[in-house]
Length: 140
Ligand code: 9L3
Ligand code: MG
Image (tube, rainbow, N blue to C red; front, side):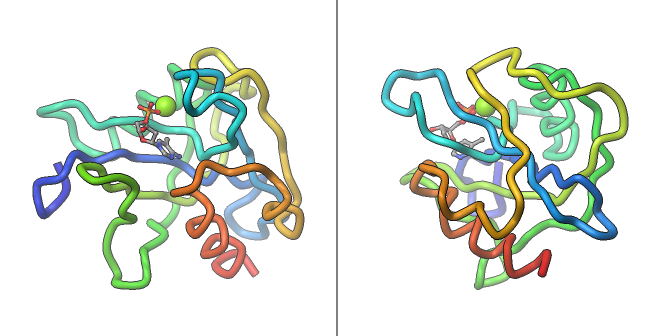
């Protein structure tokens, strides 16, 4: 749960390097049908009783088959989580790969390392678009 009780979604902005990022790993959704074809930051819902960081590590193993090192959280302009839908909010971490090479194992049909200046060209899920803009600024 987020601080105000809305269901929390966690996601990772996986960079080629936390220290000097040039590219970000973007994932194209294959499911559910309503979201298929849209690009997103990989991640998913935190389960009840699960802490947010553990949930993110679990999701990245399930979806991409990778382990990551987490960097800082990317805050929304009010300093908190990103509103994504009526009863969901999303928390996003910068990250870099620790082990494994990413493959679209679940809910995605394509992955791409995208140079930061080209990120706006992708057809993003609506809630991810402002986050991607903040990421571009944060990694400048
Ligand atoms: N969502 C939006 N942007 C993202 C992620 C990972 C998730 N970057 C939205 C899509 C779904 C909900 O959050 O409506 C739960 O995500 P998932 O568990 O289906 O990945
Ligand atoms: Mg997911």
